[in-house]
Image (cartoon, rainbow, N blue to C red; front, side, top):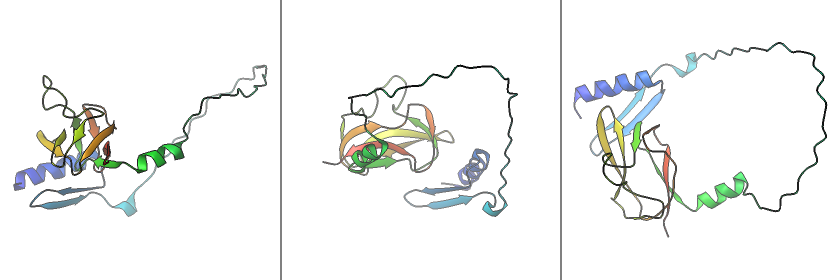
Length: 161
């Protein structure tokens, strides 16, 4: 990575509004901090709509019994805790395919090995292949194709068994 790429990265981070970005590559580690956290300001705007005095009849609702079991958020987190999460190492745009006319790298149910490419993240017109650090089966794809991702954002859930 040369000085022009580093300068471009600094400009990109400054425009993105992120306060801190860490980038680790094979031979280089970069941490970029923007702004001062102690000087952060919060502006809150509250608007209230005028209320009209209309008579609205009240209806008493009776709870409906639902025999279908809906998983709670805690149960979902417990299920997800047995899986390994592949996270984004950089900020950029997430792509599931190497190009629009090619097939996706992985699907739900695909078996992957350590070092297999699972996606591409574009950052500053550079396409970075993201390789799996674990072997297993893709359980869930957490990001839609062609959407922006943040540093350390979960991308895939992998069942290592």
